[in-house]
Length: 503
Ligand SMILES: Cc1ncc(COP(=O)(O)O)c(C=O)c1O
Image (cartoon, rainbow, N blue to C red):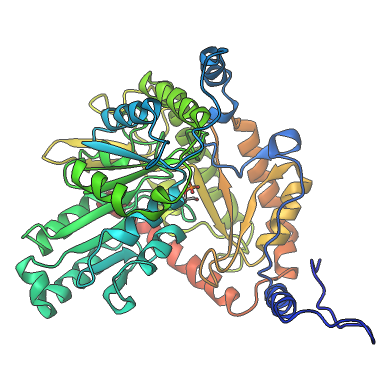
């Protein structure tokens, strides 16, 4: 469907304005490349389809208990609307300040600062923290908001370096080169800002966070390497009571800044930057999305407050354990189902290597020494044992609610799954690199085992029918890429143990 067909003005009519011609040409070009974005006119997932798409991982958005908590504090006198002002003017209410204190306490951080969204938080902090002579080093797959912040910073593009996704070896090489070539980095007068996510939203894999922190500390022993972790997708799912991966690994004091967003597992919107009081003060002075924007409403503050209360009361634990159990079920069943449906390499559906490794790894029971005290209802969840700083081991779930499946036909496959009753979104370039198009299954605490098994069956049916092979929609070399990934995946199955080294 072409949203706006390129217009050629009928004879005598006023020609389209220059900007209209330009906008229409840009949209038409996007459509020709199969990249046109459009808002989904379909009703929300829960009304018709099984939701394998939203970020409501622990199903807080559907929780009656959470809803009731919010309703119970709404009285005649409760402030709900406003404050219609920036935080810097009349928007600094006691409610906003109190929420920040509670967030700092819960996430074991010295201070917290609210932003209207995770996007604003990342843009705000990445734009202003680094100095002109500093370096920025980031995982190649970090979120667009971090990229926008980095681009708007004083650090020119030649001083912003990507390292290979989740490769602490490549990070080490990058940092060692900086130490060799820039005396300011070696002497500690210039800072290196390192940006990663704890759980990557398109791949669903965890960062090897302890390795990353140790790598930075080793390469920059003068303390001028500063790790910033975006915990958007790990909040509520990892760490004690959902505090995130940094807390799960005991890295609170070795990571300089954390971003927790409220729009995923916490079912609200907004974000908090967790950092020192100094950084908080600096952001209040220089983070433009905070300074030049109306602060979040009292209603948002209340909603976040109640969601946080759920975490504090341990109400996320069982839900998170259930998500990890469902993820284990989905991944192991897909790993078993997909090779069956065609010779390796000719499948149009490929589980990425890290998921095959999880499927191949041995199930372990939840460690009683784990700081995650939640009972695991399936007792089958795959967990990773990680050396927890400063010495003790801790286990964290190896799984995540995000299960990507590489395919040449993300859109036709997503449409097919809709006909079977499942909402699974296609993810295409430029959100992911060319040749890595996929569908992305997002699991939720309130999905059932039946939902998961039904999805596996539908996917098996798709592959068996060969539908994907006839519906190639992705231009270019995707076929080769899919085969390459399939081969790589088969090889990496052997390396299941290597998973342990990844955290
Ligand atoms: C890793 C990551 N960081 C930040 C954001 C932005 O957060 P928000 O949706 O609160 O703006 C997202 C959103 O998808 C994300 O995936």
